[in-house]
Amino acid sequence: MHFVPIDLAGAAALDIAAPLESQVFRGLSSSRVLLLVFFAILAGVGLALLSARSRPAAAREIAFSEVLSLVDAGRVLALNVYPETVTVELIDGQRLMSVAPPGYVAANPTFVTNVAAKHVVVRVVSTTSPFQYGGTIVGIFVIVLLAFVAYRLTAGRIPSIETHTRLASRDLPVVTFADVAGVDEAKDEVAEIVEFLREPGKFAALGGRIPKGVLLVGPPGTGKTLLARSMAGEANVPFLFSSGSDFVEMYAGVGASRVRKLFKDARRNRACIVFIDELDAVGRNRGSHSLSHEEREQTLNQLLVEMDGFARSDSIVVVAATNRADILDAALLRPGRFDRQVTVGNPDLKGREQILRVHTRAIALEPDIDLRAIARGTPGFSGADLANLVNEAALGAARAGRSTIGNTDLDAARDKVLMGVERKSVVMSEHERVTCAYHEAGHAIVAALLPDADPLHKVTIIPRGRALGVTMQLPEADRHTHSKAFIEAQIAILMGGRVAEELCLRQMTSGASNDIERATDLARKMVCELGMSSLGPVHYRRPSSAWDTDSHAAGFSEEAARRVDNEISTLVMHGYERARQIVERQRRAVRALALELLDVESVDADRVKQILAQHVLHSPPPPADTRDGDESLSI
Image 1 (cartoon, one colour):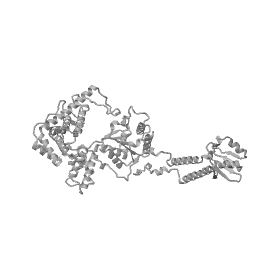
Image 2: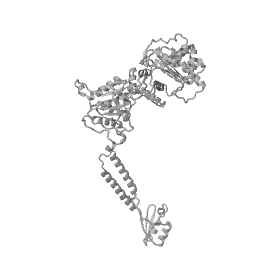
Image 3: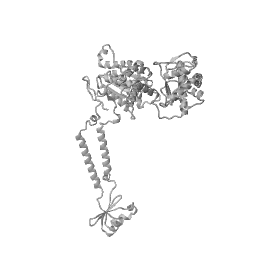
Image 4: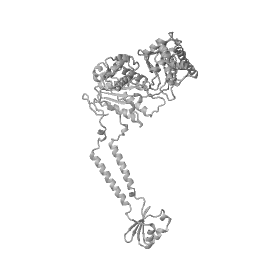
């Protein structure tokens, strides 16, 4: 992807996203390259000639015994002794060469004396001749030359430490505020930043100053990055964007260097917006186990200095996004660096309807589709979930050969997003199908008869995701808090599957493992975090591991831990007993629903109501445990 720089409002245009080639060959012309290559070849040839000159001339090779015979015959004029060979110069001008046995001359001290007595000149060639290393010198020279050329080509920089900052281009698909829906408050906050950059005099006249930074906080998929992209589409100033992971590198000092380069590029503009996605990758809290020379900490220190240090710049606005604001360093969150923290949460009913309208603008819908009804049936969905739902509906309609999307496509897509993909290839035995049917029927009957539970939506024994069967509930409205009665009802519903197996089939299976895990987790939250137990409004929490530096909760005593465990067990068993009472009284309804599931595999809410109307025994449900009142806390 290539990002083209934007020249705006007569500002000093600086191509901070120019191609790498323009910087690589800066200051290194083609004539200089040719000259360097010429000198390299010339030096190599010269050293090769000197090396060749140092070696003995080519001669006919003979046996060493023949050399001794020629010496005894008086035909030898001179002997040239080399470390490994001996060359012979005869009186008639011939040159011969032989290989002497290893250590022959040293082992025969009379050899030189006898040869000299026959008036033969003996020359011992020194092994320290500089010309004998010609090949080595040539190799070293070539390596140094290549290193020098590489240094000049990269202008003395290591490519891996160059900044990964990019400049938003107008050639890319533009996202504006009209494409952002469901987060009106957050959109107003960032829109004010854009307006301030467009008309700074409007705010400066009243003494206002632009915020130094805006931190977008929220769960994944709520549109934090989309808000930043809309700022790039609306702002008339350069928009630099990067990711927190771009500042993390294995080389020491690289992250701090990239931060300096980012803000240096930003200061070259009259006004600029810098967006850092996933800020928690570089802004993590500096704990007691952190070393002062740690690379991540040095990068964070540099970011703190650049945002609000001695060299201040009021023309740069830093916008960052994270879903882990709890682990960010306190120095990074203070006013003067991130003046505003904008929470981007899941949309409400109106927001979901607006998001669906945005995502269905370019999609052909059937006339009878009611987007508000779809939004009402998707509580808790984020913007990304709704976009995925619309896309899955479009793909399903295309696979079916339809040109428009209908209610059936959207319902199927919602079930796919909520419960997973149908695994029709999984073959279950008849015994497993019966067990799954009674298990899901137990969940459904308990959920339908508890007044504090969410309404049933669908019950199926078709394997979806990692589950062999699913009982799905949909709340009637958005819920921001949960009462104690609601959580206890959830525990009872989770226990309904195991109870139905025990009472109707006289068996226990591993299919209830996830139900037991979730019920225990709910009970633990009620006791340790929400204060919904006889232990009172006390927070009991331990770090999840020895390396968990994000938890600020202190440990508690063994006696307190024992009381916590007992209270958790009491809450789970209370839910188990409520489910047992309901299933035992409504065996006929459980059996009827299980047979229906074995016949059609999927039963919707209307059919469940019909079965209940025919087989349920009307009586008040077992009362919930109200020992501690009806607290309402978010969970």
